Length: 120
Image 1 (cartoon, rainbow, N blue to C red):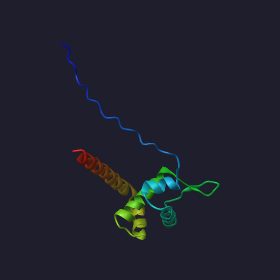
Image 2: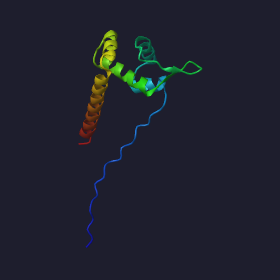
Image 3: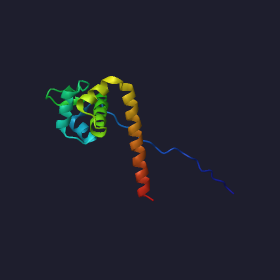
Image 4: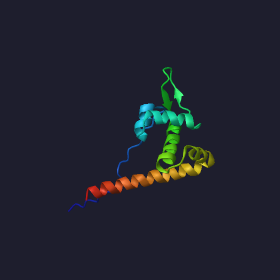
């Protein structure tokens, strides 16, 4: 009689593909906002300094993308004014990054639980 032992394996987790530069369209679709809002935030927040190619198209670095996510979180989700968001970004950026990581993780958990609920 042969005994089979079930081997537990961790589910495969895909690595997130990162680019060196993101286009305006990439960023707008990730944040689900208009291009004009991103251009407006670029003028309002000095932390946003996208590079521009010869055509003048904006190319955002991963750091720019993180800053845009922070701005989006502060302004759209938390209801900060632009001035308040600027002050918050200048205050303690490490604390703000940590808080954003927690919020992102909680969103992932919520999405997972909602998906699980729909399959029950």
